[in-house]
Structure formats: C-alpha cells, structure tokens
Image (cartoon, rainbow, N blue to C red):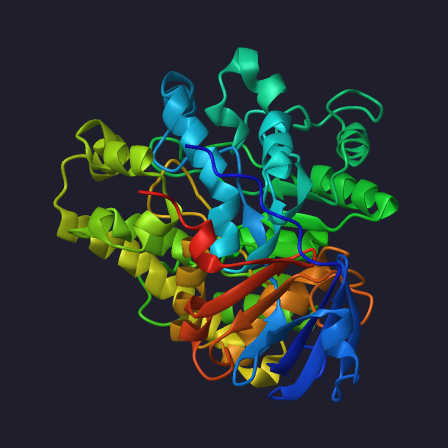
Amino acid sequence: MPRPALAAEPVRTWIVGATVLSPERGDEGQRLNVLIEGERIAAVTPTLPADAARTAQIVEAGGQVLIPGLIDSHVHLASVPGFNPVMAFTHPLITRDYRAQMPRSFLRYGYTTLVDLVPTSRDVLDDFMAAPAHPDLLHCGALPLWGGYPSHYAPWLLRGWVFPNAVAPSEPGSKRSPQAAVARAQAEGARCVKTFFERGFGPDRNLPVPDAALFGQIVQAARAAGMPVLLHASSVEAQRFGVAGGADILVHGLWNWQPDGASGTLPAPARELLDQIAERRIGFMPTLQVLGGLSLLFEPGYLDRPELRRVLPASLLEWLRSPAGQWFKNELAGGQPDAVMRGRFDAALRRGAEATRYLAQPARGARFLFGSDTPSGPTPGNLPGLNGYLEMQRLAAAGLSLRQIFEAATLHNAQAFGLAAQVGSIEVGKRANLLLLASSPLLSVQAYDQIQSVWIGGRRLAPSSLEAQP
C-alpha cells in the first residue's frame, strides 16, 4: 500500500536547547536555539525570544545534538542492488518497490543531499525528485572513454543512449569531443564531470584508458564551465595520472598498489603519490565499503541482518534470498569457497585502509570527501543509506578522526560541489537540512545510527516513518 503524502511542517519551528555542532566552528558544539522558517534557517541564537512558543512550534532538544544533514557525493540511483539492467526490466514490480523506498532509505540514515556520479536514466532522477520525501539531488556528467570502463558494459548499439557523453580522441567540435561532451552535460544540469581511468578487472582486464591529451581537454573544458573534474581511480597508476592531469577529486581509495601489490606495507611510490594528493589539496574519496560490501556477499547470514529490513522492501529482500538472487555472488566466486573470496576482498580492503590511514594523519592536512558508491555494482552488499553508515565505520577503523569524517560528509562535500552557500553547516540563510542525534558524532561513529529527527528543507521526519514496510 502506498504511503500517504507527508503533511507540510509548520512555517516556523524553534529547535530549543540542542547542542549545535556545525563544522565551520571547529568546536565540540554549543547549546543554542535554531529557528526554521519555511525551508531556511532563520536564526541561531543562545537566547530564546519571549514569544517563541506563541509564534512557532517548539521542538525540545535538550541533551541532543543538532548537526547539518549529511552529503553522500557518490551514489548511482539507477542501479538496483542485486539486479543487472535486464533483471531490473524483467522484475518491474520489485524495481518499482525498491525505487519507491530508496529516497526514504537515504533519509533514514541522515543523507539529505546526494550526488549521482553516473546518471544513466533521466527518468530515474525525475522519479526520485517526485517522491513525497527525498534528499536533495544533483548529478555529474559521466564522460567515459568510448569503449572503456564503464561504457563497455553497455551493448554497442545502446552505448550512445546509456552514455551519451562518452568521449573519444577526435577533432574539436565533433560529437565525441570533450568540449561537446562537457557542454551537453552542463546543458543537462550537471554540476561536475566524472571520467575514468580503469583498465578493468575480472574478464575485462585490458580496457582502453584516456591518454594525457584527452584528459587535458576534459579538464580544460570543465574548468571553462566552472565544473570540478572527478576521476575514477583506485590504482597507483590511475591516481598518478589524475594528479598529473589536474583532477579535482579522486573517486575511490588507493587499494591497487601494482606492481607492489604483494607488499606488506604501503610502498614508497604510493606514499609519494599520497603526499602529492595532500599537498595539492585534491579531494580524496576512500569508498572503502565498496570492498567491504563485496566481502559481505560471502558472509553467512548477511541477508538476515535486521538493518537490511530498514532499507529494502520485502519483495527485493525475498528475491535476494532466493537461488536466483545469488547470481552475482556465484559469478564473482567462480566456484571458490566463501572464505577464499572474503580473503581476497579483505586483502584489497587492507591496502585501501592502509593508504587511507597514511593520508589521514593530521600533519598531512588531506582533503577528505565522503562518498559511499551506493551501489558499487549489481551487488546487495551496498544498500542505500545503510552503506553510508558502514562506510563511516570503515573510515573510523582506517584511522580517520571523527572530526575528519564529520567534515567530509558535511562542509567539505558542500565546498567541493559548489553547495557551501546552501548546505553543509548550520548558519542563517542556509537550507534547513538538519539531523537531531542522541549523542555527538565527535564521540562515536555510532551516533550516526542514533538519529532522532530528520529535517529536509524545513520539514521534520521521524526515522521510523522512513523505514521499509514489512
């Protein structure tokens, strides 16, 4: 049964007596009162006006912590966890159920702003924004190399439809030129561009990658359009290419150390590269839960975890538990035991965590950005909202301080994507995307799983109302 439309919040609301934790202050939080008028923050003050109760609704928040809504700058809304595109087409009711729940699942875990980095369906974005309750959404223009990752997944006849902004070495002015692709992406409302340096994995290990000249044209065209350039890169080779070419943000952690993959400690070439990333203030998005999510597929009882029922509709969860729903796990394993597969992914995760730990040392001053890569592929190991919380746990275990995680998921993301005037901190005039937590996220990462209220554009939502129905 569809849920009724949510009632509009009163025009004025005072959140009274909260410990306000806003990243630009750099403190542990201050006991303040916050006024919401419509969709905006109208006041942040230590004193409450005498007529507050007569002119506004009062939300008593004593003993709780108010923070800005979280920003996940790496999602893929068109993907259905556990489905390939053909399955999404042949199971329309399950796909419908998932996409109806997806916006609520992100909100349930406090993600009030999302960035879709590879929007392969305009209809999915439009439907997401038409949902009764949904995070704010922006998107990148995806500029893969024609025939390279990830455009190689699309059949040749459909490739231009799925990836309309794919690029190829050509004369300026042609349809596949970086200049034309960036212009199309900007016309479609993209706030950033993303391209890829990925030689592949599994059966596809020799994919073409852009050369320095083509990447330079992408960067130049994006700079002229005022759009940051993101590079999918998870290897020393790929991230070195991005640093040399002027990428603004490196999407993924450094978990491929080839040719030093067997090294037990972070090799010197990787350390030197990470030093350059920190010195140049290039945005770094570790996405460790990509690997953690793949490892989860081989963990007994994963699909029985109670938190999965918060974020997935019953129809999809039931299908994932069926023999047909094991297809991706079986494809990855190729007959190998679960323990062997967990070991493979955990080894890559260890490398990614070690590189992240090196970069997280305070003296380096690295610029971390928060992104969950939800879902990273046709995998049920990366689920909306929950995947972000698991990523935070991974980051904390890898050595990021709780303040680094908090700043990465709020103000740093807002600054990186041109949103700092609107979101990312609790300041007058900004959009009222807020979270009320039972405890401070500077004391424990578990605070992000203790959300008491979510405000999206000034409208208050109870976390329980955002969970999937049985």
